[in-house]
Image 1: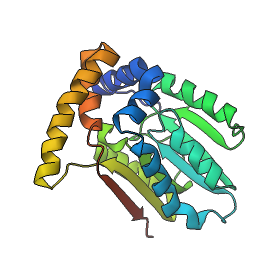
Image 2: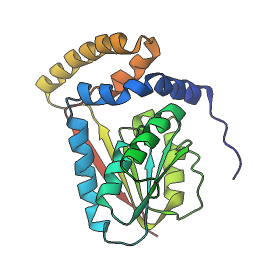
Image 3: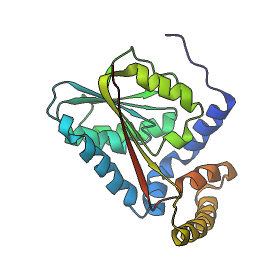
Length: 215
C-alpha cells in the first residue's frame, strides 16, 4: 500500500493529542466522572458472545492510550488486537500499559489514520471505536476503509457521546460545557485543546452503535 500523507487538519489534531497525552487519562476520567470506564465495559459486554472463537482479530481505531484494547484483551482470551491511532505519544503510553498487563504478544499498536488502514481486505472480525469517531476528519473515507478490512459478518461497534434531547438535561449540558472550557484552559494551557473538550463534554448519555457487515 502507498504511504499516506495526513492533511494539515489531521496534523493539528495529532499535535493536540500529543500535547495532552500525559494528561489524557486524567482528563477523560475526571471530566466524565469515571462513566467512560463503565461504558467501555458495556461495549465489551455486547461483543462477549464472540469470545470463544479462536484467533479472533480485533482492530481498535483511535485507540489512544489503549484502555479499550486492554479491556478487550482481558475479556477475549483468544483475541489478537491491533490499536491504531495518529498520536505517537498516546501510543507510547498505551504500550507501557500493555506491557504492564503482560499483553505484548496479543496487542500491537500502529500509528496511522482511520481513512487509510494498512491491512488487506477482510482482515478483522471486529472493529471498535470508543470516543474517537468525532475526531475523524474524513468520516466517509474512514467508513469505506472499515468496511473493506472487516471480514464478512464482521462487526463494527462505535461508542460515542451524544447531545441530550431532554430540555432540562440540555440546560445542565450547556452549563457543563462552560465548566469544561475553564477546566480545559487550566489543564492544557493551549487554546486549541478546547476543541477536544467541547466535543468530549457530553458525558451523560451513551450511544452504542453496532454494525454487521453482510456479504
